[in-house]
Image 1 (tube, helix red, strand yellow):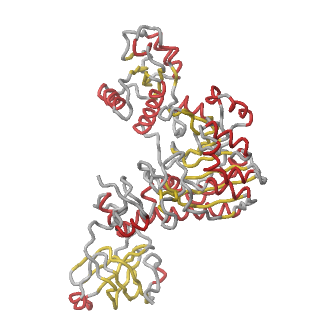
Image 2 (image 1 turned 120 degrees about the vertical axis):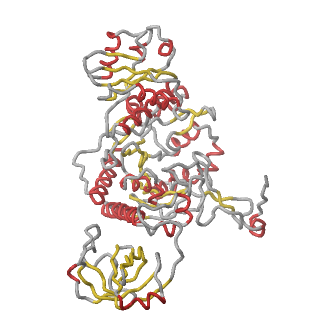
Image 3 (image 1 turned 30 degrees about the vertical axis):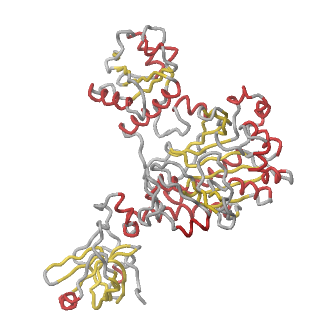
Amino acid sequence: MYRTHTCGELRIEQVGQEVTLAGWIQTVRKFGSINFVDLRDRYGITQLLFSESLNARLDEQPLGREFVIQATGVVTERSSKNKNIPTGDIEITVSDFKILNAAKTPPFTIQDDTDGGDELRMKYRFLDLRRNSVRKNLELRYQVGRAARNYLHTAGFLDVETPFLINSTPEGARDFLVPSRMNPNQFYGLPQSPQTFKQLLMVSGYDRYYQIVKCFRDEDLRADRQPEFTQIDCEMSFVEQEDILNTFEDMLKHIFKEIKGIEFNEPFPRMTFDDAMEFYGNDKPDIRFDMKLVNLTGTVQGKGFKVFDEAELVVAINAKGCSEYTRKQLDELTDWVKRPQIGMSGLIYARYNTDGSIKSSVDKFFDEEQLKLWAQACKAEPGDLMLVLAGKEERTRKAASELRLEMGERLGLRNKNEFKPLWVIDFPLFEYSEEDNRWVARHHPFTSPKPEHIALMDDVSQYAKIKANAYDIVLNGTEIGGGSIRIFQRDLQQKMFAALGMSKEEAEHKFGFLMGAFEYGAPPHGGIAFGFDRLCSLLGGSESIRDFIAFPKNNSGRDVMLDAPSEIDQKQLDELRIKLVRE
């Protein structure tokens, strides 16, 4: 056998035993006639001691970093112990060794504080995966998946695989397309989610389904988005919204307890979409800290200050304890909101000084009594700083939301080791697309409206008022899951497609199979899908999901290790009857 033990399991109790280890050389250190080698595998590091008697062999077969070796020797107690590693009380006095495979010098150091940049480590991802920090991320990913599976199994869910080669549905994000050789000039689409299949499984009587499944979206990338990603996809029959929320809140509580040792003894808070937008400026509020948005429009307009008087919205946040901010700090914040990503023309502030006085950047237009009305609305106290934005409603609310998060970051209020989950409910069913000049589904076209709002679907002027039976689960300001109660009657599904501007013929062509299935006894059903990669990254304290994916793509959607995507040869193109347009 190559090894009797791993590099992470030997302890002081094994002193005197002869063992064989195998692994990769982390470091080689020479002290006079003695050589020390740190041997690493997936399980840990063990120090090897090569005594003077092996020097002749080491001269003939010198060892280097990342060599794969096998070493046999006796476990001995270390004279200089290393308390930073579990095996730090012992070492192996080597009697024999064998180089199983030599290694080139790696292009970056294989350790936590590596000197390799992102692109270099992505190109040599197989080496990056040897680093302890990356290994821990993948182990956490496995543990999260196992905890989810265990919970869902116990709750009676059945793991059912669904196809990857399906029809393309251009609604929503762009599909990845796969040409069919056997069906010339026709294409499969890779699934953005298994949505229609899981609904069909409900029609088939599989009343509790789940799948940890790959999904694909051809969209622009960012830290928490990849072209292929993983979902914990779930669906249930004979349920209402409350059943879904309770079931999957319990699943998250189980995962937190298993992975982080955190117990949530209280129900997760819930917030309507309208409240989230009013008080936080977005539909995924970070509730680790307060600092809610305060609408000052009615309080400040009509005082002769043109910026406020012409604004659709004037909104403030109260930064507790920040009245002593310097002019330099305030100028930095002003420059920050003027960035193109935020898009504001300026920032107004009012200091509530510790002596009780209030001074603002617009004292010319507002006296102290009027500023105290600001403070009253913002619930500001002496020592606080009010930051105010004004302009077009949508842009200003979004900017205020970003400013709130930035201040939370600067004040140390967004602790990555603190977890605050939140359900956001009562989303709009529709939103208006200025680009397409029509109403589109905010969630997807299979989401059911609130029963009391179904009648409003007959009048397009009422679309903005219709609420959906939809819900998101948010963690620390990041959406980690979302779902809805589904439409399960053909006539209501047809009405939904019509509201989205889809003709009967188009709806029948794209989704006739689903509407036809509804005519054979479809049960009431609903579900949810969790962003598995996002959940893992948040539990691991990282903002990037790439750190928790074994072989991720870069920001351009490329696999730089495989050099994919790549061109294919002309023979394959001819078989697929594809002609390339060369630019």
